[in-house]
Image 1 (cartoon, rainbow, N blue to C red):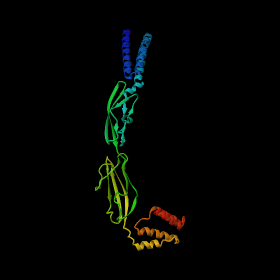
Image 2 (cartoon, one colour):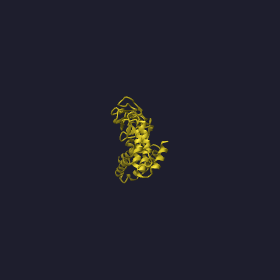
Image 3 (cartoon, rainbow, N blue to C red):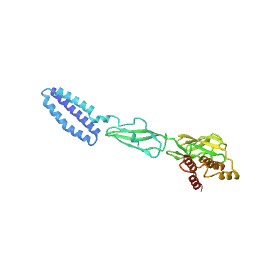
Image 4 (cartoon, one colour):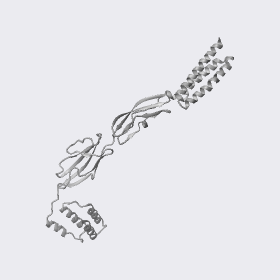
Length: 315
């Protein structure tokens, strides 16, 4: 009776072990599954031999207990236990920067073990907002479809640059509120378009606003406001100093000024007369002439050399 029960139990145990090995072989796939199949073919006869040999010594109970423990350990700690875990993980919604081109959606996903993945497309960086990309993940016999979420944001504001931070102009000279603007560009969209007669720009444009009537002498703030195609705005300001026109000199005043120009006069007098000449003509002293005046004042050149250089500059 005991012999028949033991044989039946061993037969059932062999079937159970065979099923376990086949199950692991299917999950492992090629080539790991073939190794499990070979192990099953080799191990099961060995176990049967051990059971038959020690049956008469009434050690069947310890052997069965050992087999159960080994099977449990096999199921718990073998590398194939990873097949029970997740195939992938997207820890958080990636925030990508607006720009040109595309981004690989799998770059922001963690793939576990030997998981293979394939997505329907790429993340379009030229479009802001939330984008959903369908992807398929596969490991062994397990397959999973998922919709990954990405967000494209525009965080770079337009750049506004001026020729000068402060501009000095005369009231009837040729200028306007746009004269001092060097460029209004977005890092991605490029040059933005000027929107006239508006205080608030629309996407892809910029506006210019003066704090007063710049045709009247005074000091004014010029504010440039720009918005890129996604509505990201930027502001920058410069200062206009509008001066009254210099009085137009008479012919007598011009003659007196030139007659008073003498190479033998002192340095201070010469500098004063040069500045007076430009003032009488309603002009600012050019940067080149101003540099010569500085050298003359510092004693780097004498009056004769100064006049010779001045004549060359003004010819």
